[in-house]
Length: 309
Image: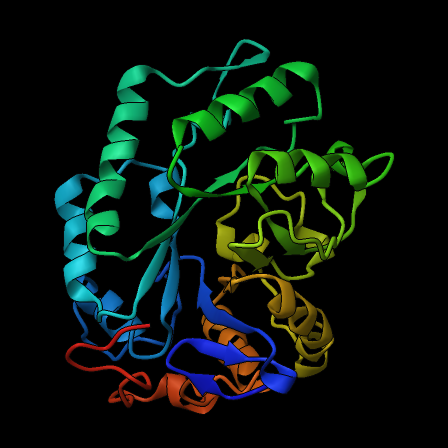
């Protein structure tokens, strides 16, 4: 794999150029990463000195007002990019009785509106729909996927399935479904424990974008309820476990225009450490992992006025 060049990873023989970015699934956690006394409102600015990409996870819990998403765009350098997680009713996490509740038109309109400042700034890459573990491959849920795609005619979409039925009896059905819809299947690294986990499928369903989310491999807490997410995703990958992904990332970079690697193991500063270790393994030119504890880190490579990807 070649060198990091302003957000572009050049594969062997210069045959294909793929934008490969590493980031974490939010920036508000990461205990021990932010300098002591740094105001919470400055954390994103600090985070952007290390990573060019973040997944906005807070939008699942509450739809941010447009003033806030505009402030995120303003606080980050020109090369910085966002994925935004869909609000929980849009992913059918809320129920009425024993059935998923359909989102209201007000919820849909507010969520779509919050994306606009990031889109206008050229910083929105994709909208991430993570479905609940009980969202099975049933006819009514297939119809819902069609409606979601129609809701975002011009957006890159990522679908993350958490029930194993979407990959049974084989992966071909879900892969072909998402290819027809031009939606990216979210690839995952997670414990393989029963129906509430998804297998490691290294497939490109939309050549415009591949997303890999690293949830950790803590089998003991995978089904734990009533805990903070940092407790559930309490896992620090070894370098050997990360290196095991490098051949797959190489193959993905040969067929996709963009490859994103997002770390959701958000206990302490594990996601930051593992994200920078992965960038180091891929020779992306990010700051080394040991600098993630420094109080005055160097600017991200290529940062500065007028920086672009």
